[in-house]
Each structure stands twice: as structure tokens, then as C-alpha cells.
Length: 177
Ligand code: 5GP
Image 1 (cartoon, rainbow, N blue to C red):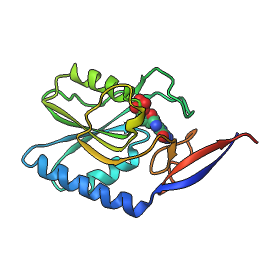
Image 2 (cartoon, helix red, strand yellow):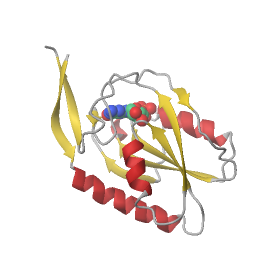
Image 3 (cartoon, rainbow, N blue to C red):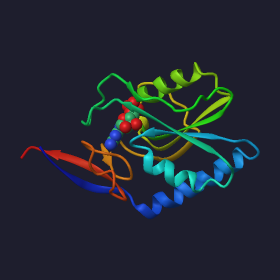
Image 4 (cartoon, protein in one colour):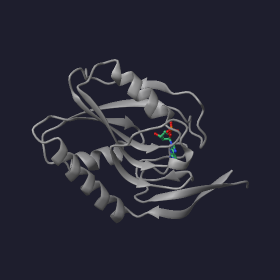
């Protein structure tokens, strides 16, 4: 299989502008609180680090890693925890920072996992969403962009661990050699 970026969907300048707006919105909504922004590794790592620098109020962060795709482009039907949070979230105002909501299974798993730990509140901030692929209903409180049903890479999103450093977001196509 040979893969290539078929089309640029979102340019870095466009992403930067939207991330700034999301940061401003969160800063306003969480004024006088100490939000805890949980980055879902590894796809959301770049988005999370840009987002927190656009939030102007005090905050704390943590990282959690789940695996659901095993390097391919198709959902495997199973979500498993690769790395848990370092700190408790009991009583905290949690914001989950995700790269993309596709079928909704990963975020559903995370909501259930975090709910058991009794945070004060949980909201979801996702850079991307593919609504046409949804299998489970998901409320996205802060959304960067809606995108069509295509496999995308760049700005943290990978194909087989590559393309995370590509500054734009592009559609990847796979071809037989
Ligand atoms: P879901 O459980 O909602 O189907 O998928 C969520 C996870 O699947 C995302 O956090 C992401 O890691 C991965 N994913 C879904 N769609 C894409 C895509 O188009 N590109 C990449 N690179 N990962 C995706």
C-alpha cells in the first residue's frame, strides 16, 4: 500500500485562528475556576499544547493515552487504556481535549471512566468531528471543525505513527502499489 496526502482540508493558519477562538471561549466560561485540561494522547498532543497557551486563566493539565485504531484507518471496536492519568480528578472541572470524534466509541469510554471518579464537571473540547460517522450520540461543548467522512492526518493526527508533524490537516488516500 502506498499512501499520499490527497487534499489539504485545513491550513495551519486556519487551525491557529480557530484554536485561539476556542481558548478565548474557554477562558471566559471558566473564569474564577481552575479547569483541568486532559489531553488524550497522542493525537490531541499538538492541539492541547496550542490550546492551553491560548487560555488566559490559571489551569492544570494531565495526559491519558488510549488506543482504538492500532495504527490503521479503521476502528477496531475495542478501546483500551494505555496510560492512565497521573492525578485524581475528584471535584475538578475537567475538560477532555480530543483530536477527533469519529464513531464516538472512544469518548463514550472516556466519559464513563471519568464519571466514576466523581469530577465536579466534565466538558469535551474536540478539534475535529465527523458527524456522518457517529454510532454513539456525543455532545461536543467546544468544537474546532466539522469534517466529511475521510481519514485525515496532520497537526497531531497520524497514519501508522507518521504525519503527526505535518502542520496542516489533510485527507490521506491509500493506493495499491
Ligand atoms: P472514535 O472512537 O470516535 O471512532 O475515534 C476516535 C479516535 O480515532 C480519535 O481519537 C483518533 O485517534 C482516531 N481517528 C478517528 N478518525 C480519524 C482520522 O480521520 N484520522 C486519524 N489519524 N485518526 C482518527
